[in-house]
Length: 504
Image 1 (cartoon, rainbow, N blue to C red):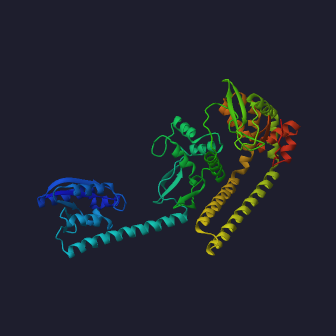
Image 2 (cartoon, rainbow, N blue to C red; image 1 turned 90 degrees about the vertical axis):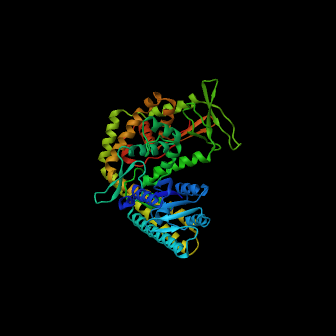
Image 3 (spheres, one colour; image 1 turned 180 degrees about the vertical axis):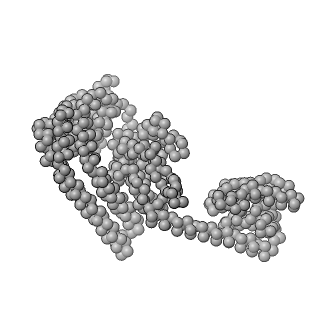
């Protein structure tokens, strides 16, 4: 009779307990030689016996089925072959027809066509004990994972931007990877701006030589997976549920939410791919119908914008790009502040320590009130779930939403630890950018100009041939202070700036 030798391990511990594949093969070869069998093939693998689809095991079964004569399947022990009864059906059918004999070395058990009930019962008992061992391991794993979730610990590999490392107490933990964390922040910042597609960000990373966890180049699906991972703002997903983790976040929930809004906008609005460098592409909407303002190239060099008239109720008015840029350049010019005034404003801000402290206290109170309100909503919703007024699907959806919002609130509260420093740094940065806005715009490429305008303006709308604009909060304050020549007074008395909407 020809013999097929099978050797398998599923854990590193089994390798250290004398069940390594070389040890199994040595004992099986000795047994085959003692029995006078001819070795037909040897199969060695580290495949789990719990998988629903065991490719290597199925390869062994296929070889036995196709054999033109009976073969002996030689295995170290029952649990090396199987740990559930699903394989017993296939093996028993082959045994009954005499196609295979199964030799379990450690149990000193041989199963063949004429095996009696006692031998078959020993086989079933061996499988049952192996199955019991598996269930015990499964229970231990579940308890371990449950405890980890309660402690805010993640089981498994850390995402890109983090590293798995020793915690110094014989355990494992996750820390920020200083080499790649800034790349994660960069991706979220770029995508949340609405100026970059996932393909553009993948190309940027690949151009800079940045590689993913496995050293492969970045693809769109990898960027999408990263942007969808709540781990970066302080939550981890387990079986579809969110749990807060204890590791330092890389972004705020607000940034994560903005990225999701940008992604939803791409998927819900049909858009045409455009590779031409249109400065105002994607930045304007129609004041009359709300549709997108789209650019077109005429005669190879003239750029005109018009309403897409997607709703079919708007007049198509063509406006030259140069005409639209005139008021924008005028705004950028008016935002310029002399360096002496910038220094004066920053010093003035430093002198208003009391105003800053009052602002921080009011903001902290608002955030705590917001957190308590969310906690109360969760409590009320839980009672509604117990009373049957809310189904499980809706409960899980809203719970996840409220928990995300609570985590964002906690993140914002933590940011006040560095509020004093960022208060002055932000003011100085805003003023310096405002000073150089016109220069930066004039010296930039069309795509960079588009990004700058998206950063400065909250909204751009086209009403016929008139451009309507609304600057973002700090830059509107710069413009108003500069045009009224009330630099110090405005910044001291207006900690929160007001929007206005000029028309050209």
